Amino acid sequence: MAFENKIIESLRKYQWPKGIVCPECRSKRIYTIKDKAKIKKYTCKDCLRRFSDISSTVFHKTRLSLDKWLDGYELIRLNPNLSARNFKNQLHISYTAARRIKRLLQEKADFFEHLLKIVY
Image (cartoon, rainbow, N blue to C red; front, side):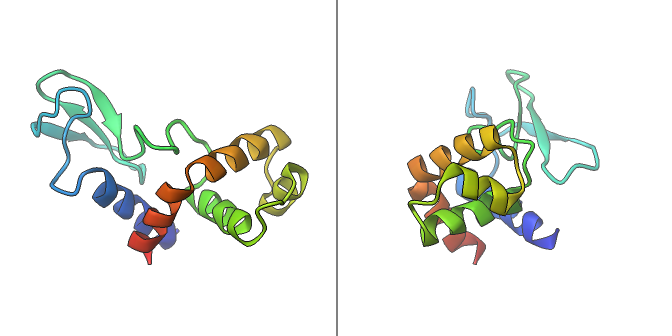
């Protein structure tokens, strides 16, 4: 789980290199919603928009752990022709999720390469 925390920290640096700003109005007047989740949630004091560490990223609304996403990216990098069925079996996820995630990983390869450089 420590690795997932490192991924989340890297996402924060990637999205907001100069500090957290509202994706709607670009305000820096943000407060953190307190809860025990690893992925922090925020509210803008100016426009009242709620957002999180994974908003506006490929991970938006995902239920899959970020570790699995990066494991999936490693699988795709090592074998670009991997079938969705084999991808599903190796990650232990549903076929529908495997197809969707595999497509997103291939489309957003630049994002994942950049994220991996920050994480490691």
